[in-house]
Length: 239
Length: 110
Image (cartoon, rainbow over all chains, first blue to last red; front, top):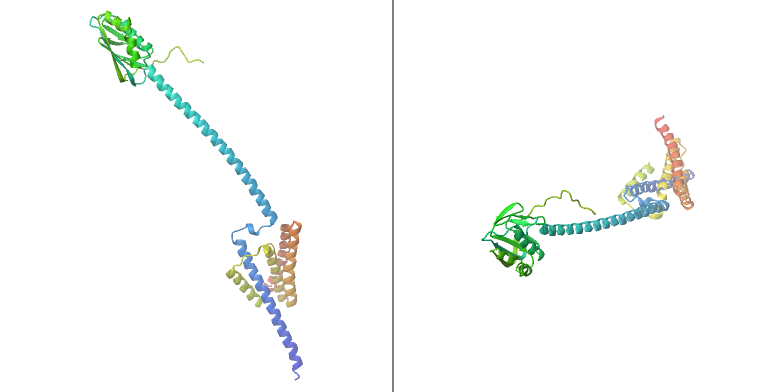
């Protein structure tokens, strides 16, 4: 029984030590757990969730400002795009117009082949009495009646075409031609026919010289011969 | 001995469970961890010095954690949360270094 008083404090001390060891164990366990959790939370991607409210507001402001800037840039670039498309459309239209004009001028000046309704005229001159003037009158009559393209023999008639010679052989633009002369013209067939056969006109002149002038109205005439344009030496475009 | 085993067990448990930190705890957890580490290093040093007291360790551990959390909480309320957190980490870091130096002297006599 004498041990009893001694054993009591020992046991209390032991239980006290056990209890404190348990508490320390729990605390350090919690610490280790917290370390692992924090390390995991810090390393697992989403860095924003660890930030404070102030920092988040700052970041949000930055992002908003950036979005505004980018939106401005977008509208600017869209404006640019629209402007460029407009000017592209305009220049394409201008180009189309210029091409059409160039083709029309090419047909009228004789630099391009042409096709369309017209007449075929055959002028015979058995007596060799028709001169350059008389044949030029045929061309003039056709022009006056609205012919848009004319081929005289093997020569395409342009703005500067000239006729020379008298009686039988005629020189047109430097090419020797002799009767019978074949003239092809594109225009309104009826009008051209009427103009040539007008009383006291070209047909009458040819007949008086002993020849004949026959006009055939055709639905489709094609003129393949082209003339080369001479560059103006003296005249320059002026506004 | 028990403390070391418990620490390792806690780390393993955290790695296995991988819980997500609740939002309200997020600002306090890192500071609390650093404060607890300070207490642990202090306890280790006291033990090597032969003056370790379980009661002192438990109280210092819990009070360290609570005070650190309180400072961060106050700092957040005052608008200087990040600065105060830095201050707490610096102070605790210095203390941990001091304790670590003492422990080193005990262990390696250098």
